[in-house]
Length: 408
Image (tube, rainbow, N blue to C red; front, side, top):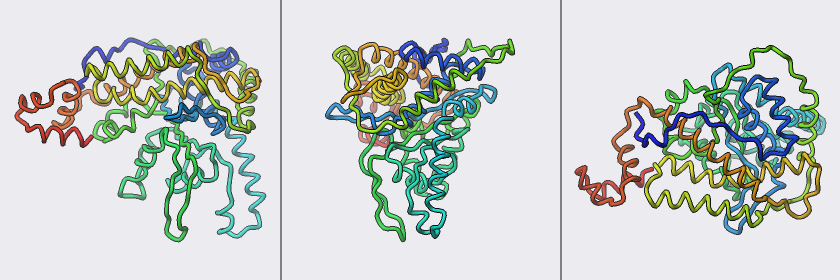
């Protein structure tokens, strides 16, 4: 069973708000949710992921210490009837059309080339569905605006980790690539040294609740930080499928969405994202509240990791929703796009939802699982202030406790 305090595992239905998005985007989301007979949460998740890929590397937030580009690790959580894949494909359709045209252009240019020369010719493909890590890194090398790994079932993404590498470098790559845009250097036999500038890695896929526990219950992904990197979009408890059978006309919504994504795809030039005074205060207070909870030892280790990632996502969500408003309004960016107080207030409301779904996922994974003694020690040590007294109370040396904790 879970060792989390029960107050962190509330099962009440919680919904992802959309009121902070532009009116046009809200209309698109509502229309597609009705037409696809799926939760609004799924459409929002796929829409934000698509917008992030389309925005690429043209929009950046940098406070002098940290840097953020639009980047999401996205998981739609629902059973096989919840229309996860069709929702992703609907919101990603403009990107798939752009990829198709890019492929035709690449094929035309390389038509008369030899195989070796063809492989060295850059291609502008932003979505990958079947790939090795090396192929994904090649795509990143050619596409500085980033690449989205798209899996109908995200288990195929996780299941492919280290398929060709026993040393676990696949998972390590995707762990380190989140919110880390330092140049990535790799060496390959026969190809020498490669430099991937500013890798922006994105992931999206669906997963069923029934397979969470058997898949991740015995894995290291809770401890190594992979799962806390994901935003979980879940089917609400009170969601009901529409039984009317009425067909929804999506032509207007598709046209609006195509225009928004295509405007981002053709955007050139770097745009700074900045926070106004109200947004900065809200964001600072949010981070301070996490620090206070950590100091009071009220955050469990996994939840603390989730909170740390949500501090990054708070900026990314606010900037992506602001970018969507810019594209929908067809306004000018100037030298900067300003995240205002209501943008940040909306983003932080969404972070509350993601903290809720992350803990729900944790409960699903750990319920009924017999935790290892070392896992219990790590969890309890986060709640106990005096480490030496804790060690003495369970008959361990303080050095042994420190070693276990540092093996996270």
